Image (cartoon, rainbow, N blue to C red):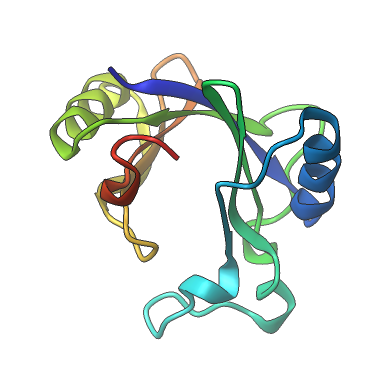
Length: 145
């Protein structure tokens, strides 16, 4: 069964926030990916965004708190709204595709589901009710972040 986890967008201070959350909840980060780590000719990363967080994950019990910094070319997030997404960590590509297809029906797709530059099967969308979702399957973690 898929896991549902909160995902927060930050304006460049995700690492600072997550070090704070780690000091409160304890534990270790499951994953930290910087924008420079996924830079390629197809996805160039500006120098001022290179050290920003593409993905950070902090396990808390059976759940995972996740976040990223929004790159400058995408503008800043409103810190009082549209700042979080629901992230689904699927157990298989098939489950990820089924959940993505079903939940995105009638909505708007921001990133079609497919193989990502960071090695997972990933897609992102806003459902027909305006709720923002991300669906991910990472074979290295068998459905866990």
